[in-house]
Image (cartoon, rainbow, N blue to C red; front, side, top):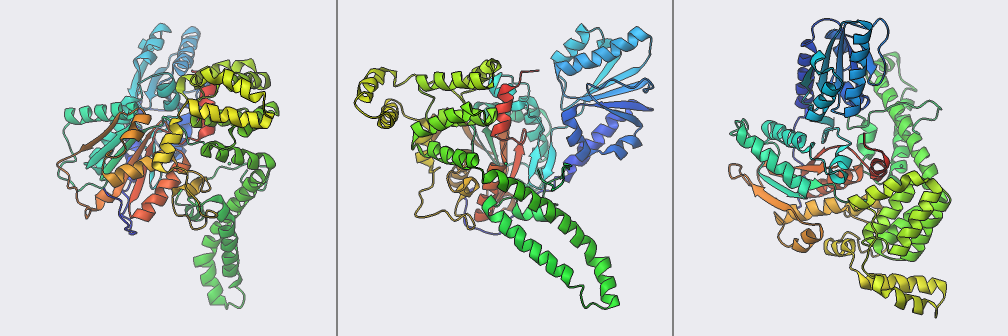
Length: 591
């Protein structure tokens, strides 16, 4: 699919059917335990469940009381317990404790465990070890896909990143393959599949195996999605209270929010001006009431007032969010952090940026932010020089505690914060030179020696793909010219640039050096049964699959690309993520 300059956008598929399928299957599973029952729900399934089947639907199917997993049942609880859980060992022990406590007290109950999205053998082993496997019935809720917006689908698997990329655990590959199989059956067949990364390749191969084993129901139907691009979350694009009251509220942010849908892809610098103009327009509509006769006022109240009040409420929330973000954005720490990030991306003032990170750690500004900056330094420089690695690690452990030794171990294993070995032979030369110059000059000479001793993969990829825009003057964020606007014109997300280039070239030709630097495992496969014509509407709809998480920056960037090129991107991700969540995943102990 060559990305031409068409500006008309194709229609997106209707993903409402995914919710209906998930709800119908859950209702069926609940009805397998007839009669009144109490439902225990895993904490991170509560929000997804609310989008699929709210409390009233659950009550319609004899769910009496709702508990969060880890909460003990009340004394007068039902004679039937149903557990809607993730396949986690600690959860199995919690269930086993409840069953064994009932046995000890002589209480007779029925127990049903519904695993989402699937059960694992290890969970059954824990139940057997605890002596309760024969007391429970187990089932699976094949809840693979949750539409978050008209173009975003999440698998709600935040642990995927850590489990696969850190622990080497392949258990989530099967749900990914089954999710692709479901999408292909509903909206395919897909014409062309591209991918890069070991996890992407494994997921694709298992998906194709599943397709071959099953009868292909999508053959002969008109496809709604033409292309699929699978990508590993192998690297991170490291690039911010909503109400005026003390009470926090939850707001569902998607395209149904008329205000949010207009600002969600804009750079923050443009948002406040837009909201201010929106506020003035809204006030003008309210002011129309003056001078109305009784009939006009009646029509206004019945037809417009409710909508205006709703828009006013949303506008107040978003303006409040803007003010909160502005407070953080104008702080000196924030501005200095942005400056350091830009310097690291561009390869300038590395010594000054390292000193800033040291100061950041010493002042204990934020353990997550300090880790993020160290990882950005490591990624852009192909690892930290040994003396900097040891120094930063020591300072961090002193500031935030020795328990973070495991955090450094995890970050090193996953390749986000490493100690580079090349260049160590130049240490003696550096030492002699540094005695002849000032400390500031010595730092710059050290940086120069280090860059001579090793070639940064990031720098090579950045130069090859043009990730750092060359500017003639100031970048216009109100009228952006490329995807770099999502990071203030400083950087184009690597994942998005790769997708753009591969789609333009209709394959990986000409990107061999980039592929080599990214450790390969690229593929491009066509389905000969699907019409590959630019005139076909589905050929302008691309399913971008992020394995390990997708950021809103990447979503905004690809939405911009789609708008510029007359195509639409749909996002399938194992979870919505950001750099802070990834750092937290490295800190957390595996459950």
